[in-house]
Amino acid sequence: MTETLDPAGWSPGAFRRLTRVTTGEGHLTVLALDHRDALRAEFDAKDPDSVAAETLTRFKIDIAQALADAPSAVMLEPEYSLPEMLMDGSVPGSVGVFGALESQGYNAVGSDGGVAVNEFMPNWSADQLVRMGGDGTKILVLYRPDRGSHTQAQEAFIAAAVAQAHHAGLPLLVEPVPFELTDAADRRRVIEESARRISPIGPMIVKAPFPGPGACAEFNDAAGPHPWAVLSWGVPYEEFRDQLAEAVEHGCSGFMVGRALWREALDPATRAEAIEELVKPRFAELCAIASRGPSVFNRVSRPSLKGM
Image (cartoon, rainbow, N blue to C red):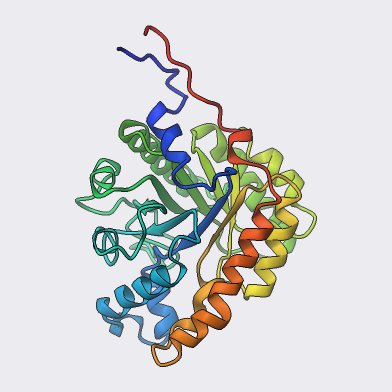
């Protein structure tokens, strides 16, 4: 059988894998554990480079094992968590896996001291992620739509990631992270316009910070044909919970949560207690809120095969 697909469309494999990273109702309830620089800074803000790799890996294992099959997917990376956390069962087989592609995160700085253009991790690709057992891929992109050559370079990076994901048959989640925001109005404009510009490049899912109170309907329109989910962006848990509640009323299909969920569980001495008293109840509450939003399959069309 030979399949012929619209070049802008997603393959049957990517569509099938999207069901692996969502709930049975098509919601994204994703545990984010792909942090690297940002996680080191959480452990030691004054000297993040002193935090050992083993500390990061142990933390990720503890959180993933505690939540077990509660998430629809876990977001990991190949430096501290892949493939080890799949091989040892820290992530159950019933839980999907997103793998990060980018080598730089929130703290990326260019050689000139400005915000860097994102790069792919060396010796790593979407094809390798498939071989490691990944179900979807993701890129974090430091992005503003008004920065000329930097904006263009980041859009080229996104397009390259789209091409990788298409070739590997993986759904791609693009996370445009704004920077140097001046006020709430600038935040709203930048986040909304970022989605509007990135949408035609072709991500399957847009992952974005909360655009602001009263701004979700406009953001939903800006995301175009793509389902979207909100990230916690390090805000306190209660703030993120309320953001998610507003977002799902205006088209949001779920969440990707990291620091807002598990920040209080960083200390190994109190981790087990924090997980039981905070992390687990929080995640359950977020899942209940996300269930009120639309399914991702309301927007992602089933691929059509031709020439069978």
